[in-house]
Length: 226
Image: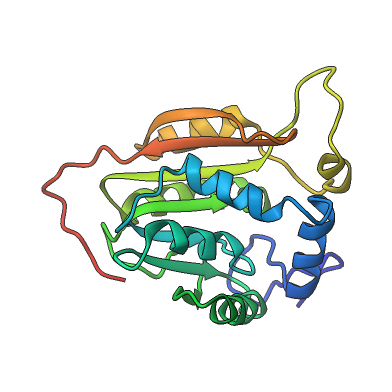
């Protein structure tokens, strides 16, 4: 069942699931005034410190723009996977990757129950997605991130923040009214999951903030495979 905002209660999650893939891309274009979406994705890939050969998961990948940018960063020696609760998003992401001439493996799945083995990924990306999850699912998602990260692996979480007092809201902030997650809350969430925060700050666009954390798990941990 979809709610008035286009989410779906039949996907097996209590988080908000977006289904209008074309609408998602249109809103992204409008938010960036038609020119800056790719620049934002490139900035996020840089903040995640993506390296050639990395194995990357984009959790809550939407229509795949960031996953495609990540694949270009990690090159032929790397692999990129995208997971989203919406089949419509996954279908559009798959078409976009094919048109872009890059290989990204997309599949439907839940953030709170990632369909991948332990210690699979060098990097997990979570962008503009955490605010869709209720608090309990955020906690479960953070623990899932640590589970699927390799020892020493990194996670980048970027989302809408509450903004600073007295600071003028950006255009994207005015459009985006249905949720945000305070940066301090993101940092606390990652820390509670056993991840060590290595960086935090402003993405470079008002209202968008990031936290970068590292999995300090023992090098003896067993790596999985996607």
